[in-house]
Image (cartoon, rainbow, N blue to C red; front, side):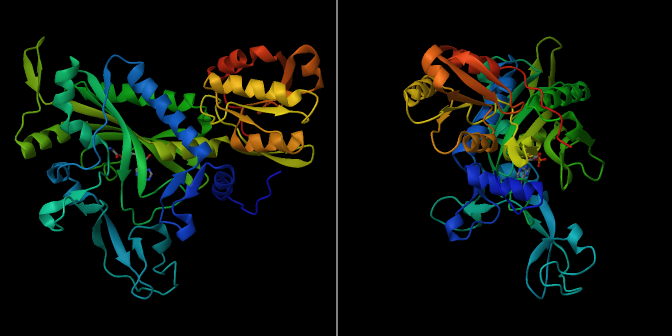
Length: 451
Ligand code: GAP
């Protein structure tokens, strides 16, 4: 049983994530780096599963989307053209007493009191703070050598639009997808991996004929919500939020967020944006290179409009963890369980010999090796009571525990215990790989939340 003094789900998740090897604070032995996180053995598997699922749905299963992996460092003019040098800013104030800095519009400053030192009305006037990380390319540290760590992956797609188009024989409408790191020097990061300074985005830019953009925006809204639902996120915790005029980014004509109901409120974890021809027109203007499309059928030349789907991999992972986290009472004890979609679960099956004798370890080791050979991540555990072994796997989100017992040595069957229903069935040991494969690839319907 997991004992934890934390009272918030987020606090409990942070400690479970560390205990089980999902997520650690970056450079923890030095006291940690502000809002940067590292993924441990289970976290890295969960993240890879999420990424691969996105890539499969957005690239491999479609004829109309090509993949790309653009560099993080780009020509500095890219960020002038994109509007990020001039406009990717947040208003910042500083407390004159303790010198802590905050976003001027942070709710905790509403009373005029510093949330850190308590001094009143001591804030400086707001000044605009650019969120891009700046560094220098080459051995000279001056303005001419300034480059930025990309704050979104999208721009790498726009500047490669013609390259991909020319190489791929695509016709409009078509898309370019990529997954990669992005960096933002957020003034107030927080809530674990929700808002961090280094994160990963999975973005797809869909190039369409002007005038068809609204219809494609609706199409991508539906596609992306379906994908999110299929992760196994409960429908009651998901909704769309349409941006108001004040919320729209400088490039967007219309935008929707997919929001999740975190315990700290409804929050965006993916955006679907109608970026019009803003980006390609600006790159055309700043680079002097034509970024037009010639439509043979209509004999029309135009700068395509772009519908963007922009998901944060880390933030989606947090949604997956938050939605999967459950505590329930089992025979008077609290069971902490991550009800992860088996397709996402880092470990697909754990294998236990009931006891370390009578031929059971040999059978269990063989099953474990067979699962691994079939690329089904398996965990072998022969330590402690069977109950404790189950609890460890519940916290890791392992959907099935396979136990080799006395009967296994007689008739070759083993028990499989289901993480969510706690039911047990007996299956011939030689069927385990087929059984786990079949179950792990089925659509997953989450159980309702435990009241
Ligand atoms: N290209 C459009 C774009 O970047 P955005 O709404 O700024 O749009 C898209 O970001 C997604 O990237 C967000 O929905 C979120 O999941 C993720 N994201 C943005 N900033 C983040 C941060 N500081 N930490 C973690 N994820 C972030």
